[in-house]
Image (tube, rainbow, N blue to C red; front, side, top):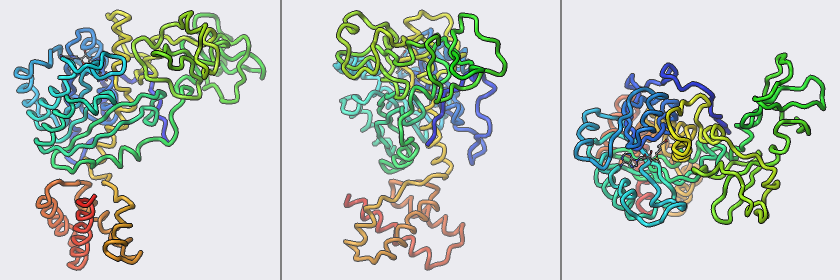
Length: 457
Ligand SMILES: C[S@@+](CC[C@H](N)C(=O)[O-])C[C@H]1O[C@@H](n2cnc3c(N)ncnc32)[C@H](O)[C@@H]1O
């Protein structure tokens, strides 16, 4: 299990992509569309990608992006495909990524597909025109069944992309937030579903709790380890704190809240303004709900008078988040420079972002596959099918599955759509490895059987 906690700092250009070169000897070049304040770019950079260009039409998002990630974000209306597509093609990106606007799909929005939903089709147009090896698109779950995504999917499949489409929960990818998002990763020439196993395996078995981020500091409070047990440990950063003698350390799980702690009334619950009749108060031992622009609003008197029955603490005593807190939950470093924007715009940019640890986790799986370090899995029911349909004994089933895995290694993790291309690549790998004739024909036969099973599925 991993918990990648959002690092503080580290947003400078210098940290960019140390030690992450590919077999080709260079980092993969990425263009991000609809880049906002840079959550997705930050995560991809941390995974080892080289984000060379970003686009957004909101000036303050472009300014925030540029100040924190380097001056390569451009203000542009991506609806103007005829002007921007040739520019992107010239950059020859290895991957195009983006989270097209989701308000027209979002449960918080009008649910009518309109102008903004159309950007999902526009995203596909950019991918098809530049033809990068990879793309990744993020959107709300609801987009899955939209007419816009159906059109986009068809364009991408016709252009030769195999698609891995999955709804992921950010809480299983290093983010203390139950944020369900549609992720579609495409690679040219692959079979559909080629990366699903790797994405599922990268998920942590348990969701990340808020405590993983706020364990020792919640908003404007800081933990100073008390010198004597039973003394106060949590202090406001705005007030005087005790003499610090190596006292800064993470708050231990065993720390008993003290009634004089500056956040004493707050640690029992955190308030996230809910939609409709959803729950508002959350404990530190669970992930936050999905962050939206209004998450950090104070509880209204109507909620306090009629709280959700599952609240773990009274809303009136719950901690109300600061903007810094919501930014941290979304994976932005504490020193992210948001200056020059209105508070409302900052809340919107934070809410819009792809949490950077999640983008990093997905990016790492793409890089591993690109480098041939991961392979598509061989599902267990293939073995059952071999036993039933091919009347194979258990040892033979195991051998056949092993040979399919070996074929996938020889193919560098590729799961090629075109059978001719696959056979050609396999024969080249046999030659390179100098495999014996018998081994080659065993592997060929196992792969044929695997494809037969796949067709029947
Ligand atoms: C869901 S947010 C993307 C957030 C970003 N992926 C991140 O991780 O921070 C969608 C973005 O699309 C931008 N946008 C909406 N319509 C646009 C258009 N016509 N041209 C360019 N950008 C647009 C919005 O300003 C917003 O920043």
